[in-house]
Length: 244
Image (cartoon, rainbow, N blue to C red; front, side):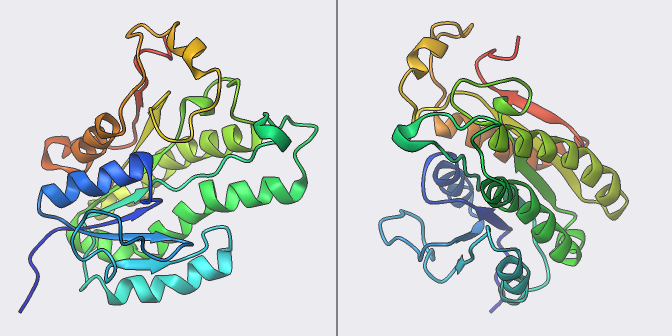
């Protein structure tokens, strides 16, 4: 029997925005493939999760490249959406912000491999499947990619700024293949890893509240749906007006 469901591949599904996105697409009847460096967590509430999970250490470029063949074998020739959500932000001892002076070259490389190079490797490696489906790519950037953030350090911020620029380049390159490439830039979203002091930022937001992961997932859903069929090369701010 053939599986006629649309298929999404998402990185960083175990919590927060990624977790909410998997639930959103699963509820819409999509088959969702997830990947992370950890085995599938049986507590994740979506069907077929263990069978559709690929263990990849996105910080290791060789491992990411090697995983492409495994992913392609699971896709049956088409991929309707690739969501590059995985991201890391390294902290100093005690959870403080690492600045330009304190971030080691090894840490810079570690952050960029996950936040920037992995999306390149996955999109390029799955180009044929995305083309066959006339699919969509969504890169998850950040409010920190456009301004100095009190908690996110320069490695994280510059990797997200680079990912925003990459989104434009990918939209240009993938467009003739019928594949749309966009980005979303979340602001302060309520997850289990909020930094102390986030409430001070929230007090300055026009909407005066934290975002919910499901609200971000809804924007990702829009960009992957037919409602956004003429939208490509944009970065949508999802941040309660934090950018204004």
